[in-house]
Length: 118
Length: 115
Image (cartoon, rainbow over all chains, first blue to last red; front, top):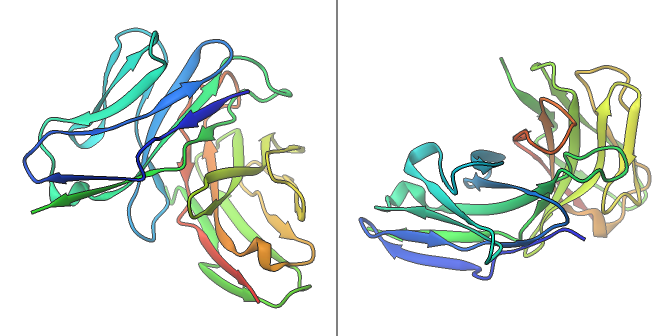
């Protein structure tokens, strides 16, 4: 069965410092990995995805993520955090394996709250 | 494009009442889905649709019905509301149902309270 783990409920970082939000996954077949961000009282917004190719994926707002197959991880990173990056971040995985006819089913992690202090 | 729209934004129901949460998208997306978001549990898939006339159950379908008569609309019906259905509900759509490659676009959510 597919699963995603975000081991940290909250990450605190000072503005200007690098940030990392961790994600590990378990999936049958090749993983398709996504990061989404949720600002207060808003829906989720897509940040970036890994499908195949280069293990370092660049996305919106200066975020990037590194796919590590041997460690089954897909950590979100940013070289220099901004206060405006404070939000709830979700990692999600889907698989190319056919589940009941629809292979676009995403499994989400429980989310990590990123708090950037000025 | 308006993207994915949801109505209402907020709703309070009494136990046993029924209601329909509306969702519409104007991107001609094939795939649509409903999630509920609860504290500490992330998003859980309720129902999904891979095209007009085709729907299927997700992880937590009990107490909910869906239909997809058009590409644009994907309403979620609560048959007999229970306090356990107090949650924030998100509708999402993506370009294609195939192979899980495509990112999903989310609506702004409906905050439902059942008393």
